[in-house]
Image (tube, rainbow, N blue to C red; front, side):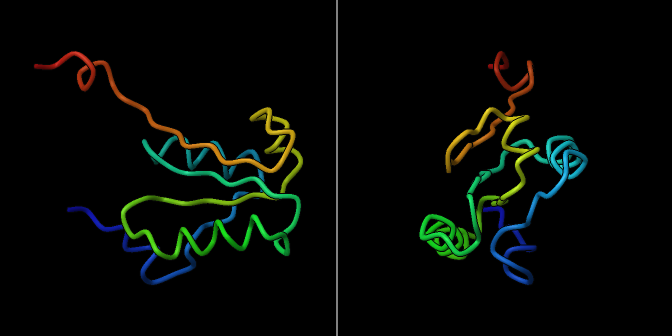
Length: 93
């Protein structure tokens, strides 16, 4: 079992504020859960952070950035789970 050490030693979810942050995350993480919220004071944000704190296996990130929301076509508070499988992972026996 693989454990996400950054969640144990740091915040439950990292913050993605810029398109560069998003690009870096996409380059370095095959799987992540991104929560998009209007405010860090919203109930959805608080619930998402509680979920992230209880899960040491997955990478969680949050954003309130309008630029990130527009780039990902997230027009309301929502959650995206990104999974990338390589050709070899899909077709190896």
